[in-house]
Length: 226
Image 1 (cartoon, rainbow, N blue to C red):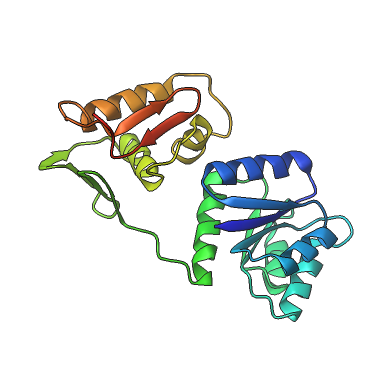
Image 2: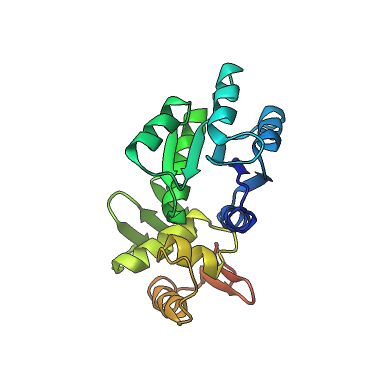
């Protein structure tokens, strides 16, 4: 997924860019409304994430200009203005979704993924497979080979996220944000403990391990080597 983040607060923009990229997406940034409009016109984006209060051109004016030009790229508005009237005004201006600040990145990511599907992208998978390991998101059933595994809810969410990003390095920040919904590092070994428990359930007694620790980077699940 390719996103354009139009946000004048540099710290907020850097946080979003880092988080979206760690989630496996491409993210560009514009620091004001004029730059955002120019990038939106010239780029091929799945979703625009637009702050409402921007220098040079406010977010609602930017969205209105895009809609007048026939650009129907989905837009999620981020704003500290979170009253009902503010949200209605944003949606009527052409926004597709409206998320008040402060927000959870996990919720923002979920909303953006929903909006991206409106552009005709593939539906999100309900079953993930890595080697002989299979996870069914709907039934919450996990099977490796012929054995059904019993996972605790947090272990299931952890495995689901790892399998969704199979073959990719998943960082601690990504896990804290998307599995624990933390937006800070709690300075505990909570991830290590759950990774160890999960590894004992999916890899113990197996010829080929699937869950790998990538030193200095994070974790990866893949059809592993012996």
